[in-house]
Length: 244
Image (cartoon, rainbow, N blue to C red; front, side, top):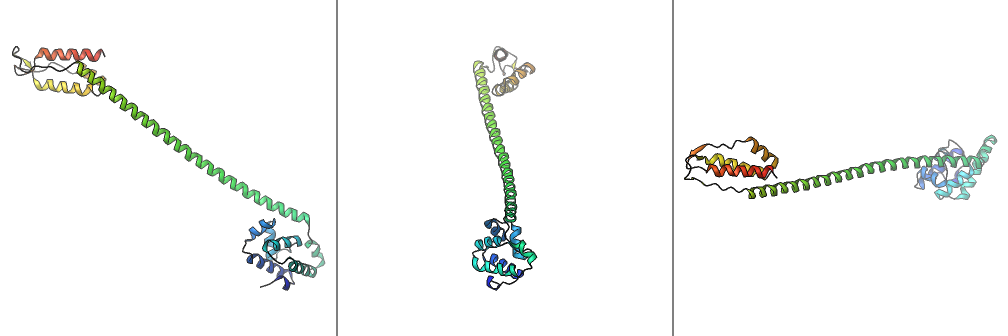
């Protein structure tokens, strides 16, 4: 392990800086952010690709918890050993550091804008989901309302049919002795059963049935229904249906 007291070359300084950052348990990006430096500045100092400025060194030591005095001595020792032409570049330059901080702020701003874009996308997704849920709720409410309307209409038609059937009761006498040619029972019963079914379901269909279905039933003799009563029932039924 290379410490600041044993550093004598730029390479050793870079190695010591790199070990200090690793031992701090922080990533270079976190160290750079905490120190207010550009990540590239920290990487270059830790890799030895550029000699760090003294102010940069102090910030890294502060964040990583190093001995500032020992690191300052190491920095001056290595800097004094460098060629004079390079020493000036290593002096603390507020403008350079300011530019580094600007670069860091630009990176943070870019990251913030990216996060904002991600949040906006999530908001749009949530809005679509919320709209879809509202639409589904609206559709369900409309279906429920339609079911209520349909049920109310069905009950209305049933009530109307019952009222009609009660107003025109079926009263046929079977085997009337005064008639020799009564109506056959089964065709009349089928006719009346269809009337009852349609009256409870759809009055318009009942009207169509009364207009299109013949009511001249077969005659079989005294064992059937009285034709006069059947014909009177059908006449009163038609009058009640078409006058309603």
